[in-house]
Amino acid sequence: GGGMIAELAKSLSDLLTAERARFTVEHPRSVAMAKAAGAHWRGGAPMHWMNDWASPSPIFAAQGVGAQITDVDGKLYDDFCLGDTPSMFGHGDPSVAAAVSDQIKRGAGFMLPTASAAIVGKLLSERFGLPLWQAATTASDANRAAIRWARAVTGRPVILVFDGCYHGMVDDAFVVLKDGAPVMKPGLLGQVHDLTATTRVVAFNDLAALEAALAPGDVAAVLAEPVMTNCGMILPEPGFLEALRRLTREAGTLLVIDETHTISTGPGGYTRAHGLEPDVFVLGKAVAGGVPAAVWGVTAELSARMDAAQQRIGPGQSGIGTTLSGNALAMAAMRAMLSEVMTEAAYGKMLAGAERLVAGLNAVIAARRLPWSVVHVGARVELVFADPPPKNAAQMRKVLDHEAVEALHLWLINRGVLIAPFHNMMLVSPVTEDAAIDRLVAAVDGFAAAMGE
Ligand code: PMP
Image (cartoon, rainbow, N blue to C red; front, side, top):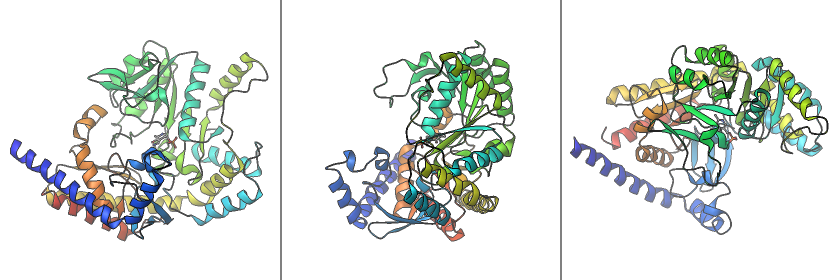
């Protein structure tokens, strides 16, 4: 009843107060660095997300080794955030380190392809099945390129996304459903155009809504993650992705699959594991092991349509891009990642680790009879504060208790475990040790005990 809820809220806020005080006492150097940096970096850090952790001020990292980070106060963390994916194969991988340091000595930015570029293109095609590729610097850039090209080749204005999606700094994707109606996200400060005019948004797993949204024939592309990983985690219901492909084909709409997070599924991403047939495949973050780089691949048919669109504008106008994309450093890093790091064997270890984590969390839930559940897509595991797990973002928003998430995260930080901010996402790398997984499970159990659950 109401009394119990009030009691729980009080224990949450008491817990947060105590854990914040503990953090501050135990991290004097990080706190001092944040204060000093605050004179020159807005908010005390070079990127505002670094302030979005549950700690009262940012943790300053000293170094990462394997799946662990040491901070400037000498605290050691088991890292299940892994930079929110770029480091999902571990920090300081020797193959990537060698490739990058060798290349930087021989030059990084030529605006010319290198021998590694030829190899990387072949590796991408073989691994993911799409024949033709382009590089970008971030997954955000790659998604924006995909959207622009989809509009260019189809001559259609509208982009369709799923409610609760995140595809990076891609304004077109910042439209959400509020009480069933599309609205721009409040976070989209400074956007002066009404994006609801050209972005359509439907609930994930809602085939009737998808079909209706495609029916007018004005949708250039659907931009989607095969598993939604940025609003808690929402799995596709059986048949949903097959129907998505069939309906987009019937409507003449391109399908852009953003695998930036779902590359956790296996060596060829969710696409290869589940036989998806995207027109565009997008991958960023981990593909270059932390060197800023992304890639997007297209079908031969789409590539030909892009050529035709380019020919219509005539020579001397090769389009829009960014200078650092596809540079020698990015290619050297990707070559090492694709040939030596993102291997079958590495995936074998990550997937086994993820199974261990899922089993451990499920055991905590069962033993304490918690109203929680665990979902995962390969090595990416999400603890959801609801059971059964929601099927769309509207349901997820109701159960994503931000204070509880913050309390769990800060509890974990103070016990030497990092998980990505915003929701309860945990990444298992090939170099994550079983003992680290067990420590995470024990810390979650301790949190549940502290909350009296
Ligand atoms: N796509 C997905 C699915 C993502 O989760 C993200 C980032 N969280 C991006 C794209 C954007 O990646 P970046 O910030 O590296 O541009």
